[in-house]
Each structure stands twice: as C-alpha cells, then as structure tokens.
Length: 424
Ligand code: NAD
Image (cartoon, rainbow, N blue to C red; front, side, top):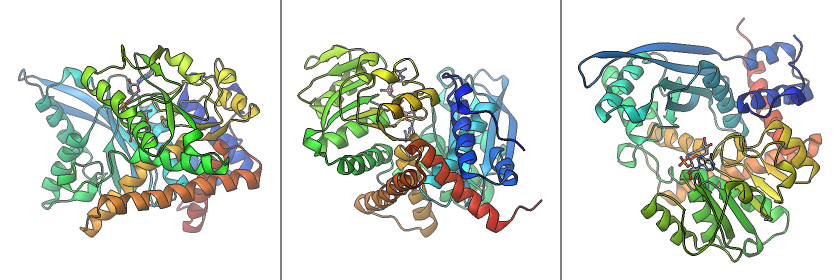
C-alpha cells in the first residue's frame, strides 16, 4: 500500500489531518514495513452507543456516544472522554491515534483510545449528566477496564465524571475497581500531583531545553497563551522556578510586563474576576500580539491552530513548548524550522498529564499511595528521559523534533507489534 500524500498538501485548518500527515511523513522516513503501516494507521476497534437518558422533564432523550481504541500493542488503551455538541467519530478516531503516539513517546505501557458523548453539557442538569455518564459506562462495560482501556477526564468532563464511571463499573463488577479510570478525586484513589502534572511536565521539558541552550531561568523570558489548568499551572511553576514570565492570556486577551509579571497576583485576579481583562498592573495586548512577542520560551497552552502559516514567520521565540494539543499547523512547522525555533512538540511537551495518569493507575493497582514529592520525582524521571530520547532521535536522524517524536513513537509501537506478531 502506498503512503498517503505528502504533508505539504494539508490545509492549515485541520489539526487531525496535520497529525495524520505527520504520522505518514514519519512512517515514510522510518521506511515502515507496509503491513505495519496499514495496521498502525487504523484503529483496532470502535464503538458507537446510543444512550437513553431520563431527562428531568420525565421524557427520554437518546444521546450518541463513542469509544475508539486505536492500539493495544504496548498495553491497555488510554485516553480521555469528552462531552461536546459537535463531536464526530472521525475526530475521536484521530484523537485516539494521537494518544497511542503520546503514550509511546513517553514510553509508558499504554496504547491509545478516546471517547466522547455528543451533548451540550451546559444544557444538562447535574443529575442528567450523572445518568448520561452512568448509562454510557454501562454500555461500554465489557470494553473498558484496568487491563483493557482506562478512560480519563478531557474537555467538559472532570473528577466527578470519573467518580461516576468508577462507581458504575464497580457496581457491575461487584467490587471496587479504582484502576478503571484515572483523574479521580484524591479521596477516591486519585493521585497527588495530578492536577498540576501537565503544567509541571512543561516546566520539566523547558528546563531541559533551557539548559541545552546554556540559558539561566532568570534571563529567560516566558510567554504563555492560556491561563487554565495547563497555562496557569505552568506560569506559576515557572515563576516559582525563577523564570521571567512576561506575558499571559485568556480567551479575552493578554497582559504584558517586560520586567516579569507577578504570577500569583495575576492568578488571584483571574480567580476573582474570571478574566484577565482590566488587570491593573500590566499592559493589555491581544492574543495575536502575544504570540509574536520577542522571548526565549513561548508556550501556547490554550487551543489548536494558533500558530499557522499566517503568523509563524513573526514568531520570535527561541524555544516553542506546545502545552495545547495541535497549536501549530504542519505548514507553520516548516516556517519555524527554517527560522531556527527549537520545538518541543505537543505529544512530548504536554504528556505530563498522561504520565501522571499512568502513575495513578500504578498506585491503584498496588493499593499504595505515594506522597506528592515521589509522584513529582517519577514524573520528572519520565519527562527528562523522554525529552532526551526525542532530541537524540532528531539529531541522529537529521529531522526536526516534531517528526522525531512521531518516528520514535511509531518505532516503539511497530517494534512491539512485530515481536508480538500480527494475528491475521
Ligand atoms: P482550560 O479550559 O483549563 O484553559 C484554557 C485556557 O485557554 C483558558 O485560559 C482560556 O481562556 C484560553 N483560551 C481558550 N480558547 C482560546 C482562544 N481561542 N484564544 C486564546 N485563549 C483561549 O484548558 P486546559 O486544560 O488548560 O487545556 C489547554 C490545552 O491543553 C488544550 O488544548 C488541551 O487539550 C491541552 N491539554 C490539556 C491537558 C490537561 O491535563 N488539562 C493535558 C494535555 C493537553
């Protein structure tokens, strides 16, 4: 089978097509066996379920839910569950593959999966959401499990959603099964350090990149797009580590102080006002201007498609660490590479979350819980090793870090697939 077309034909707008184009590009460079290419390019299994829910009105409404399990070669499938009104099976399929590569790049023993329910969670009451989540779980009872597929929170789902899934699964199993999901509340067998793990993972890989370029944190200007779980946590941890965080944003706009923002004060303002607008101690700028600021480290941690062929030429950072999934398009990658930007790609840079999910799953299976410093230490071990694995791979194979991360991940999955053998 021929490889799919070259990445240059991919339009900027679709992050999933960008991901698949990078997969194809990496597979071609690896000279991946065509049989393995065919196996790895498609999901292992996909499920569509129709979920009847008693609404508060007393009427039944039917919702559509999906779970796609892309790959199990390295272990149980792993990936989030999202609730959104415009979900498609195609999108879930691509996100499931993304998880396979992300788990492989940080070398944790999981495959990839993703799931979701087509719904608008803001239109549902808490009890409707609970019934929806429980029935979705019941429909997938033979499909998920600690040894099979371990869901986690994602867009519009949270610790409470995971608690409902764990409880429903446990009711059917007739005993408490904590390891069926990760991202649970700490009191319900969740892991210490999980909430901060993605931001902490970013700090760890940026630390390694900064060391590589001989910079000191105090002379390193950091710009962060987004101030939610990922961006806000990364900003705080970087500020605490002595970095000069000069700009940060939310969906309404950005703020700038070349001397360095007082991040705890900014986050307190954000917490109180639910927006960075009118923050009195910094200069207001737009999200577009933020991305083009001169700095050493730029962290897009908001949403996809922020750095495109339109603005990539004006990005002036030395290091670009992708906190969000798919913030840079395939076309923008080429421009950044030409301009000498050192990229820490999303499947590596934001893998702190899934790595801590793995640590939660391990603790659940042992029934023994580590203090936060131990969790953070193990997270650091994984992120540091993965950073150097990717950089070394890039240098050895003369490719950029993006393609190196895909090549490394595909190589790892292909290798175990080959030694397990294809049961065809
Ligand atoms: P969040 O909802 O907590 O925060 C998102 C932030 O981005 C907010 O500050 C929001 O105001 C801002 N934002 C949203 N849309 C924007 C836009 N169009 N322009 C500018 N700013 C915008 O979300 P999060 O959990 O911090 O996740 C952010 C990104 O990181 C997403 O791409 C997510 O998929 C990815 N990610 C998250 C995790 C995790 O553990 N939370 C792990 C891996 C990847």
